[in-house]
Length: 90
Length: 416
Image (tube, helix red, strand yellow):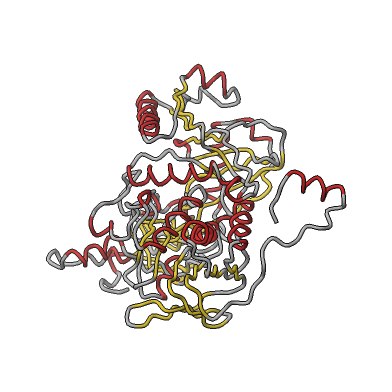
């Protein structure tokens, strides 16, 4: 599996650390209430198709990357730097 | 038909011509008291205990492929009870006790082999932690014996005891741990459930759940609509997708775990060995193949296959611990989809939808849980109350904070 890092180009998956759903970019407001935080920390869509997820290019440019990857085929549909990713996107 | 030694002898002498199929292949009825989604180990065990212990026999088990074609056929067949947290300990302890009487219970040889499971320690601190783990297990009614450095050398001469990074300092022997024949567990439960009147319906995929006024009333399948008094879900690996049909989201991510087997060899490995520091565990099957595995690949996946980096890592860890296996040829590898929960422990509970029950989140530990999970899930579905051995495996623990996080890794499913 290779991941197209927006800074470094196509790199081996060994260089990356996986952090899970890109939902984590959308932390609720501090006063959003308990239910919102339970949802944020624990509940996941877990789709069998495209998943929006966070990868950290640990052994490269050390940028956080948002990737769209198909969980059934491992095929990447696109990557972008997390700092450019639109907050609030699903 | 009850199996006995006499029958085996008689059939053997008469050309094995009178054996009959051990379960029926029924057409689904229009309504059942209980419908179980998923004909793997957990689903079949649930159906069996519903019929056996609670007298509920108007039950169907729906399986989209063939019985036992999912994770129960894609694991490393290890059976153990060496957990540390109260809620997990009593559950796995209960499950192991059911394993120990399973062959008599089912009248089927599941080839349970309590050959012992050895967990290695590589520093003074780690050996002390193993001593604590063993003591906790003994207090729970399970077992654990600490092996010294010298005992490890004497009993496991084939290990690399003097590795510079991870020398073997001691080990914890869990004597009642071991392995079982995974397919036989499926067939045994299927046969026993069928004999008690349960309909096992294969090639029947659940495509939707019919909910009326917050109440589950039936399932839409590839073989038509089937009404149900209660519906239970035992589809670990795919739980997220079935739960989604009920409008639920779970604290679960699906991840892939690989396992490997070598060609058949003469008996060389009498126990199961777990090498935690290198993330490697190994046992030898009755057929002679070395069966081994390691960590999750580490990212979400529904593909039943893993990737090269983890395969290399596991092979390296194996070679570091047990250099002799380098000459064995790796024959096959496979991957199973794991329901990885946010705290690494399973869920057996009611759901917010009335009459819909969830059994999921088995992470990579579902096989050893098969009898315990079936018993506890059947108890919950029949009585409406959690079984005492499973009363901490609740869905709402992620809200209440009563998590069961054995590794202390927090809400990172790939680290449990």
